[in-house]
Length: 358
Image (cartoon, rainbow, N blue to C red; front, side, top):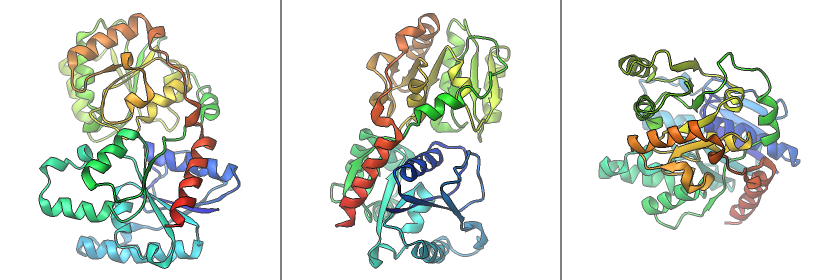
């Protein structure tokens, strides 16, 4: 099978990592994979067995109205993908979804599937959208068969858009052997024993809640934040206001965060919402204790109930942090082999085969 994976860039996010991991797994099963991306940002390690095609979106002038710009770019995407002649196109993240609203590939008989990485009612702030905006998203998200990376996300999709779109759930691939290898690449220059959070500095991750909860905890171990993002200045200000400069350590973004996870006493996630909560599954792949807010969606599909706290509940997160610091063994959970890339890739092939018949 010939597969094209489409995404905006290969920057250091979970969806971008998904594209590369799934692509590698498909190649290992004997398929051919092309990755088409729109911004020249590569922050992950790329596999030479995949073929990469940069089609620069920013070459189109911003003075062109957005719908026209997207329609013009869709023609360029269609021309490139048509030359690649795939059996299936897997489209990831919102800019690509919007572009494929204007694509003609499906009308030419090509199978196009959306891969959904976000809990849309939260990501789009659905309740506060105008009816015009809701209608626009209805057009975007009901055109193609869709794969959600968690069951909660699939149910949210149905609640928003109904049940007429072919829809399945396939969890994200976790390359456990590769993660274990990468986790030994270096030893972090940190004192032994710390709690780690890995994630972009953006509102969704709710670092503010985490810092408040940590400030009220026993603080027996330092808190290490791995990541970067638009809220970094605010996070640094909050750390100073809470008097945590000596206990909270920012180490920046790392394309290989696994040594930081492997050496941690435990991992914490404080998100308001997630798609799949990839880092939680990666922690389990390394045998690292993990706790999380029970946000929509993903954490409850990865972790046992006693690892979870209500979203936004500072007191509950403080108590869970204390428990994690005191008894980390209580928060170790088994890794689900269904997350292994070869198992996930086979599910994608099966769904592609099924939807090609539609």
